[in-house]
Image (tube, rainbow, N blue to C red):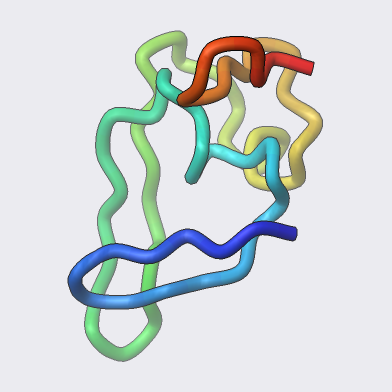
Length: 66
């Protein structure tokens, strides 16, 4: 697990989840429930991505694709 933090909220997520993938360009959220929708430039399945099992994962840092 890894902490994702932005100006409005923080959440613990799988270290290979959409939160940390460079292909995830947008995260929609609301004040009461937090993040609820993600946009992947490759159109990958978000449920798979959030669980850390997306084959298309590309880490934000160089060498984070494993």
